[in-house]
Length: 447
Image 1 (cartoon, rainbow, N blue to C red):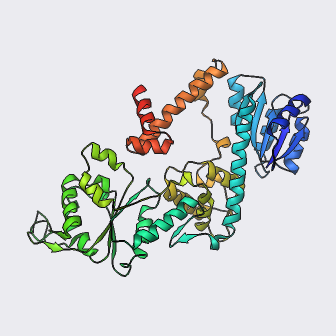
Image 2: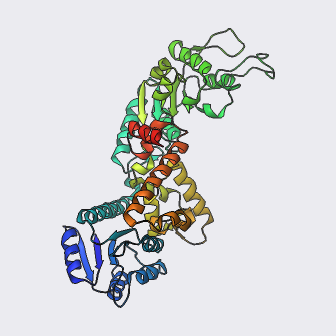
Image 3: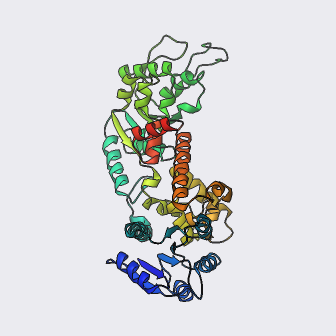
């Protein structure tokens, strides 16, 4: 990793250099803004510490210059200054700085910044290396990944496909639960039989029993002919029930009987029909909480959970982001460096589904071979627009106090967003936030 220190104070340069030096890091120095800008233009850097107040050329001028030349290899910039004014901090962030440290700063904080940047650099190099060898990347059917956790999932799918037990697939929306179900079917001895997928959450409660189990003519108003239902359509093969957590309680009871006895009764009939179906189910909901709340049967849960597979969220395997994106670009299209950086720092709340939609949309509408972050509708963190009105109430506060207040406000907004995205499912929201469920419950009580 290449680090540039732009600082006019020789003692401060030496102290910073000494604090962050380590094997694998090339540390360069510049004693004024003009020479620092020249080094950035000619040699580039992965990370730059930039003093705000310098002779010849100040830090704001350098930030402005870098913003006007997006084709340069722009580093992650950490501004250093003795000025603790929050409006100066906001101005630096608006002009592209990644962070703002007030002198005297804590050495451990600086080392932590360098460590995070080092991890991102190492990750980017690894992804670039592996994505260049796309054909050799491990995959299972339509599933592809360079992350060890996903390789473990591939092995689990292969083993589970040899079993006749039901499989419960867990994961956030957009992680590819149906793709996993299709691979379970493809690798099984039922692969030459039907695979039928149905989203139970998309069917109205009045029609779901008919959709699943079929009905006989005259069973209800509008039933002018017999309907076989998805269980009989999948007979001999595999039935994938998506969003199983949204299934009404009455339907849960009937599904339990099928799992226990391998027979079903169409709506409006007394005839028992034998069925031979392997059931795969999926949900993004917390079924354990649903059982506590008596909205999901515990006996059905244990029947469906013969084998459980969990798909990790895309944000927890960022190595795969660029690899997957390359699959949906045109043959002559490529991602710009700033676009790749933005993609790897974005949280992807919609997971692989969102990534696919954004990349395919950008590829279809692009007027050049280069795809940038704006084409995808995302911006690098250091370029995200800053709403000045949000900070107005903090401008007159001391910087330390203002930082604390802003962090508390951010935490509140992050919790509200996670709860909204997870339909007020506390356990799922806690996983999204990366905190313990009990911790989130305490925070919700304090709101």
